[in-house]
Image 1 (cartoon, rainbow, N blue to C red):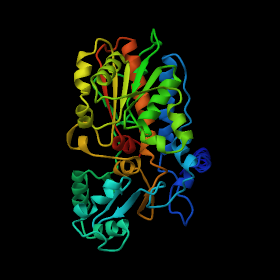
Image 2 (cartoon, one colour):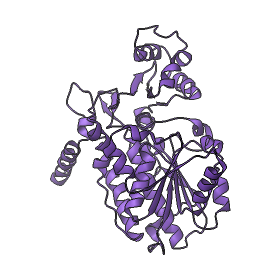
Image 3 (cartoon, rainbow, N blue to C red):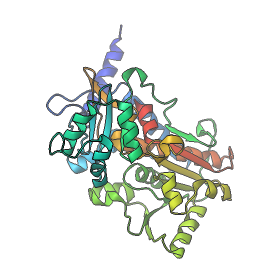
Image 4 (cartoon, rainbow, N blue to C red):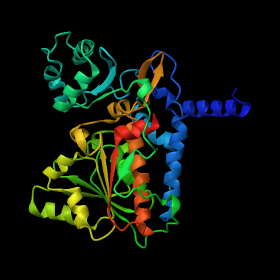
Length: 387
């Protein structure tokens, strides 16, 4: 039987979930908000504690308000819960013949792929693209839909059954070539300011870079000519929160000087953050594995992807909402899933990547490993760790 203390703790957690703004982003729009997924705030606290602990060893304590980071975009954009439609509106939870999946139609190209994906003429079930998706999905299996959609390049993920949502093996959601943790080592601050190159865009990677900047690292945000960070099209307050503390550099890597400048930056960096699929980087002439093999100092390469940088998932596209569903991070009511918060896998991944990067840096500082570290931080795995 629960004790009085346990009841008090439950009430405190419920109150915190509600007052944080996360409740207002979770559940059906026409009913009361849904409660937190079991243990979610506890896991979030554990992550922000990791950040505070390791940042202290690197010279400056960074205290992150986890719930605030998770609701920051929704506050900036005035978003609210929409049930089985994501807060931003671009992603739907869809019921197939044998389960649920999430798919995002955030880009014009995604909508153009629907006839090929659904194997139906456009507008078969109505004038709205989502009407076609829901009607066609009801006649097919989740595996069929997800496999076909992923092959075409759609941001799509199956929702694990409730019985199969086991989460990740730990709260990291990241794998590393060395697996070192600063928990067992009395790390001291680096002898010089850390040099960080941030090639990432949107939310997860830039948040990782913002946390590192808050520790005092010298962070350079690199954008490619003609391909600015898509977050520039959103609220300026969010973009500034993620990027204001960084130096900004635009490079034209289609030119020899631009590509050489990028290579120089990457070779001299202590930490590199990127959020591209490996083949996209290779298309630009950037090979993380090769650069790390050639590194003459302890370099930490943070690779943020939707489904991991190796195997079948390496070429898959993901956004924060469909990745959260793919990890099982949803809110349930009467066996019906609803989106949990706003694109929640994005900020969770950014914070997880920051903690893992700093721990890898600290491990190198104390000589646990002199070898470079490649961190594979997948949004779906991070979401699973919080499910």
